[in-house]
Length: 376
Ligand code: ACO
Image (tube, rainbow, N blue to C red; front, side, top):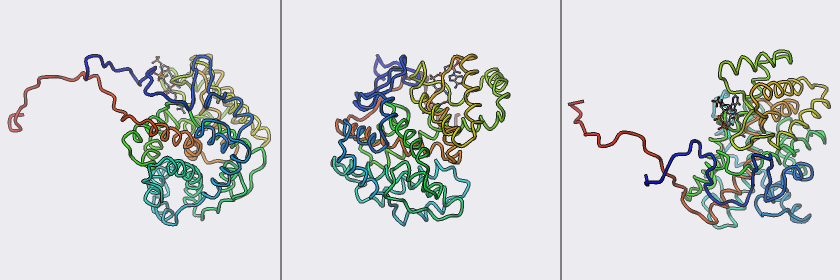
């Protein structure tokens, strides 16, 4: 350790590198991708457009967007060798574990996997983003004893995801809601999984390895796994009346309430604003507002009791529930979107690479004499 290195718990308020991809103002609750406010993107953009923005640094024109859409639709294919690997996993495998394994396993099949030139890396980023959705849908179909549904190249990334999961064309409002959710989850500065991807990429490991590291990190309930944990909480609460006592009991027992609090936002997470709206409108359209109303109640009690705000994972849970997505697929759906940001960050890291290698503040013993094994 150098004389000056001091540990900062969780690296809070430490800028690890310069980045031009997304920015957060945690005090004012502002998130922007390439300088464009997330509220504008949520209202006007789709996932493909967001992918282009994150990767190219600017919004695409009509023809560039159409070309990207066609290319990503063409990349909707999985190597036949991947399905036996998915089928070999126990049916009880958590889909995030299956997804992490599958993305790692895609590496050897990928013609560009070891390519470092910038063009190949971008091509690979698009392909892996297209494939991530196919893998998630295939995992769900196979574990339920069905063959994967062939993708529909005429559908957007979001609509095709719902189609492959549910086996029927989504309604326009369901497809739009999924698209907005994918836009909202696409990037978030140096969050834990993005940081993991950048650390792996900084060693010049391959893209599949970096994304595998990101997936392993996203799974944890303090990060992307929180959306699944929120749904389990809502199910455990069961009724709107139980929300208040549940929160009081959880706080008294020093338990964390999933979907609340954030390492950076000290006010409303701007993504939660849109997900709350989607959760309400999807519930109303489906004639099932129970999860939304329970979520709202929970939110107001947690705010009053602990001063914590809902984060991105809170209302995505009830929204995905009404969309008919199985609870243990919530975090994989997050990954389907966040891969846009992960791949953009890997490319940014490699464009001006510096091995990420921080230091520890050593607090262990020193000058300890060595004791031979027969004297211990
Ligand atoms: N429920 C109850 N108490 C909480 C919560 C929560 N969700 N979040 C923070 N707190 C409390 C802590 O117990 C602690 O209280 P104390 O000072 O009395 O001990 C205080 O607030 C600070 O908590 P930290 O965990 O140190 O705060 P930090 O800002 O580092 O944590 C985190 C951020 C990890 C997201 C935390 O809020 C949390 O665990 N939330 C629940 C999990 C979650 O929703 N994760 C998803 C985040 S969004 C994402 O990653 C996609």
